[in-house]
Length: 377
Image 1 (cartoon, rainbow, N blue to C red):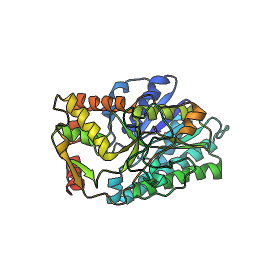
Image 2: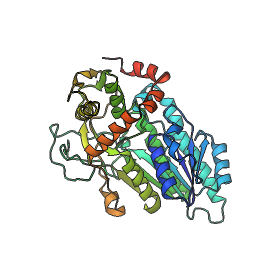
Image 3: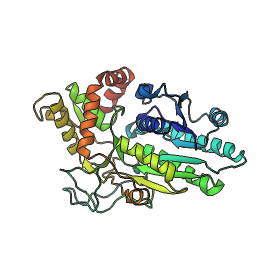
Image 4: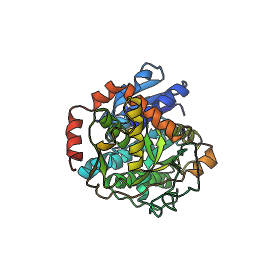
């Protein structure tokens, strides 16, 4: 596979995947396909925009005709599909946009790829459609141990000081889908279409489900960059409910490495979970971020703890996500490279060192959206 489209390549996770592939595989032609919605930003890729094996194409993934023509013109033999609407809060406000992009957009890509690849003499040989999804499609896990217990697994991503599990069960590749939000429902629908195209037409597909990502270039509607930015400006830190919801966290560059390994070595028609066995309650991770930002800004330790502001809980807020990625580690040899404390330190430093990037994307319409979402103290 030499001619590869990465959809959503100007977004948070996508830009890290594009950068990795462009730099690691100079013999590949990498096409970054992105509509450039609010969360897509070509400034994320300034360091590679002049590379000879990189091209950007502005396109809506729902535009079947345009994508089919791109497949023909560029002789695409690999697709890494990351483009998606991904913020749960926005899905609650506007589920139609999520259904259009995440379900119909994925279907448009699948159908265009099917028609083009089936027109070739070799058909599906040497081709691959890799679909990136979320652990949220699985629903929620019980929080049997709210105080935390010693977990049954460990990885490099696990915290050295705070390594706890808050329940007895985990999401496995065989876990039944039970989406609870319009976002997760739309991703579940897209996952099913991808698998159906393999089962029905023999298309070589792979699906992965990943836990929460954090790191540089993440749009500040998501928890960690939102709070870094607010602490910087001494603004309130809106915490849903009591902050007891649990998520598994993975550094975005480790996710990009997993995508690389799976794209090249994963088995067709398989599902792989990607996570770090790194569970945190929201309130605890917020306190870690506060301490880190305060220290790096030269403020007194914990000076900004009083910025924590509890707001009305989100509708359908799942209690706990925890993903088992042992299949990926066992079969393909991937594991996270950064310990959690290292990843948080690296992330906070990046945002503080790139305040112009942060200020540019948190102006205008974002400010209106922010006030609407979090002015519910």
